[in-house]
Length: 217
Length: 193
Image 1 (cartoon, each protein chain N blue to C red):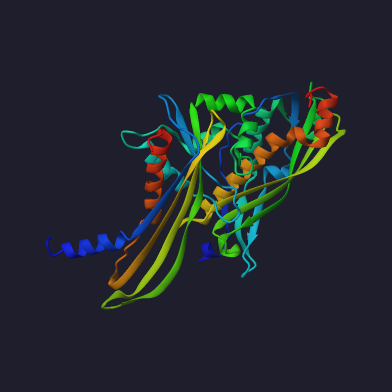
Image 2: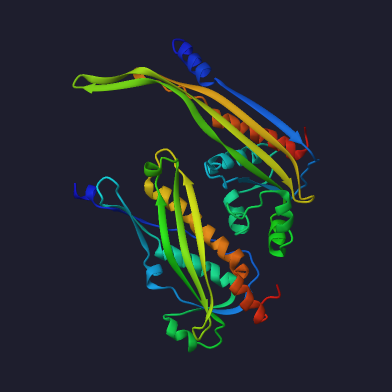
């Protein structure tokens, strides 16, 4: 066990080289009463990318988890229940569009049924860059192995904008920027040392969002 | 070896939610042309010139219209042929959706990290006796991000379902705003604006 300690320590240190920066901008008060809920939706109107459903689900799990968890309506359930008002081409882009939507009785009633107090729009993506190095693998009658070194950088940029369904205004936004370098040395066996960039962005953004909505910051 | 040369068939399979809208007080006859019922798009391999993927979406498109139309209109009557429309009692109008174009964007061809589907429809609305009311074009678009270890089937399915939902959203929210449809609805006091 003691012989393994330096290896485990090295893996922990190298795989943990991610920096996460979170910025918050508040322009209104927030609080959530018993029975009230929120929904977290990914923006999908952009031509070049769309906010990944897995990331939206991850943030929803963080916000809804723990002793101080908030009730979060699952994204797909909400999109189906509110169909066709939150599809990529029909979703409100600004709070003025939200006001127009709330003039439709069916939409207003359905939102009230779910007890939704805040809509959180998540927008962003993770990009990979600075890929370098090569790894070559060979296999023969006597066995096989890999040799080389690979590295790359992941950069996760996400922004969460919070809309208040009482005031029909934006009450603030939280942005996160997580950057991490991953390494893949290969000495016979490749040893992936992956920076958990998106996971860190998710937990950082989720926890900050939970505090923001509860009005604890 | 033989299996490697044949085209892969992808059957679009999706379920669609009922739209949250107020029903129009109309009895609509609906006729699905044979081309729509059995619609299949064939993607050709650029290198070999042979069929690469066959996307069968006819059944799924019918399921979509069968979900949307009863939510949009008070009564929906399915028609076996357009000739039957006049003999059915109380039909206010006959709706015929026709698919005109279907395009598929695969990541390996577009070099984008998304599967894309684009569809174009000709929608026709006529009176029970066949007289013209409206004829308009609708387009639908859906994309699905390419993921690690994801099959082409799964990517195409994802894009197709998004495109179908896009079509349903446009039809639901846009039906009464088609100028000729709107004129006819107002002339018959089905809507006031």
